[in-house]
Length: 262
Length: 376
Image 1 (tube, each protein chain N blue to C red):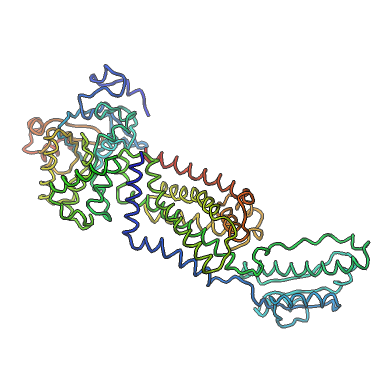
Image 2 (image 1 turned 180 degrees about the horizontal axis):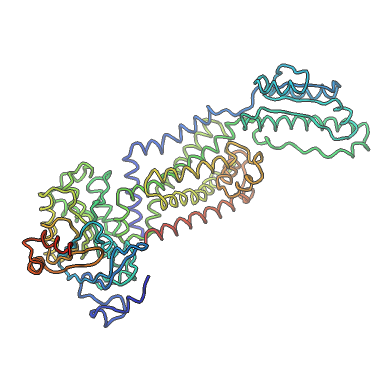
C-alpha cells in the first residue's frame, strides 16, 4: 500500500483528517489505484457522486470498472489513493460501509435451490433484520414485482428477467442508501432491461444513489452523469448531454467510441 | 450477532435437505459403509496354509509344529524336502507360510544358545501377512516359554541364562481377532471425517462457484459468523451420523461400547476441529468443487492409510511411524477403539487426546486466519 497518496486528500475532506469527512458525496474517490502485480487495473481515478444520482460507469471489458466497484464495496483493498462512501473511508471503515450499501453483480447471486421467499429471508437475515421486518418487506417487494403467487417457487424456475429483478430486490432488501450494480443487465432481453431501469428510476426518486456499470449505450443515456474508463483511467465524465456536445456525438454510442479511440 | 448465524445455518440446512443426492450421501452412505465394512471386509485369519521342514526331528521340534496346527489357524500345506522347495511352495501359491526348523534347534535351545528359526510368509496381502507373522511369532514365544518352564524345573541355574520372553498383548482386546470388532468403531471415524471435512469444504466452494460468496462478503456478516454458519450444520450432521453409526455398531454388530458415550462425543468434538478446519482450508485453496474434492481426498487417503486403520503402525518403517504422529486420524482411531473396546477413560486417553487437541486447534486456527485473509 502506498501511503504517500493519502496526503493529497480532496478539498472537501481537508477539514477533517478522520475518515468521516466528505459526507457531501455518496461516493468520492481521490487518486484511487489498484495494481495486480505489474498491471494497474485502476490508475489514479478521481470521481464524486452526489446523493440520489444515477451514475453510469462505462468502459470496455478490462477497463477497470469492476475493480473500482469492488474497492468501493470493500471486496478489494486499494493499492493507493483513497475513497469514501458516505464519508466513510474504504480503507478504515469498510465494515461500516457494508451496512449502508447494496451490491449486485452480473451473476445475480441468488440461490437457485431456494425459493423466492427463502432468498429474501436469507438476505434480510444476514443483514440482521427481524422476522417481522422480513415478512413485511418481502410482501411489499413481491407485490410490487407481481411475484407474490410465486413466492414458494424455486428461484431456478424463474425467467432471467425476473431473476434479475429479484436479485435487485434482495440487494435492496436492507434499504441501502447506495446501490452498486455491476453490469446488472447483461444477458437480459430489452423489455426486461426496460422494466429493470424503471425500478432504478424509482429508487433514485426515493433518494437512493445508484452507481451502475454497463455495456449498453442506451442505458448510458438514462444516467444523470456518466464516466468513461479507458485502461484504468477516467477519460471523460459529465452528463450525457454535455458529453455529446463536447465530443460532438449524436448519441452515447458515438461518444463512447470517440473517447475510447483517443 | 447471532441472528445472521441463525439464518446462515437455516439456509444451509434448507439446501442440504433439498438436494436429494446430498441427503443420500449424508444419511445412507454411512449406513451402507458400516454394513459393507462390518460384513464384507473380512480380515480375520482363517486357514493359513503352512508347510514345515523339520531338520531337527526331536520331541521339541515336533512340539513346536504341533502347537502351530493346534491353534486351528494353520492347515498343512504340501511338504518340502529342502529349504529351496519351501520358497517354491510360496512362489507357486501352494503355501501361505513356511517354517524351517534347523538341525540344532533343540540342542541349542536347551543349552541356552540363540536359536534361529526361519519363517517365510507370502506378503502379497500385507495386512494378512502382518497378522500371520504376529501369530507365528506368538506361537514361538509360547513354545519357548514352555521349554523355559521345563528347564527351570530341572536346572534353575541354566534357566538364568535365558532372557525373559516378552508377553503377547497385541490381540488382547480382540481375542478372536474378529476384524469386525476392530473395524466398526473405525468406520465411525471415517464417516465423520468424510461428512464434516468434505462437505464443509464443498459447501463453501459451491458459493464461490455460483457467486453468492461475493454477495455474502459485501454484507456486514463477519468471517467468524460465516465460518460458524458453514461449520455448525455439518457438525450437527456429523453427530447425527455418529449416533446412528454407534447405535448400529452396538445393537446390530454387538460391538461392546465399554466406555463413556459423553467421552466419545467430547473427543469427536475435538476431532471435528480438525476436519472442519481442514475442509475450510481446502476451500480457501480451491476455486471449484472438484478442486476442493480432490484436495480433501488427497489428505484423506493419506490420513486413512497412515492411521493404522488398514495397516498396523508398528509394521511401518521408522520414518513412516514418525509421520503418523502428525496424523490426527491415528489418535482419533485409538481413542474411538479405546472407548469402544477397552472402556478407556479420559485419563487413559490423555496421550491421544492432547495431541489431537493440539492438531485440532492448530488446523482450525490456520483455517480461520486464512479464511479471514481471503475475505478481506
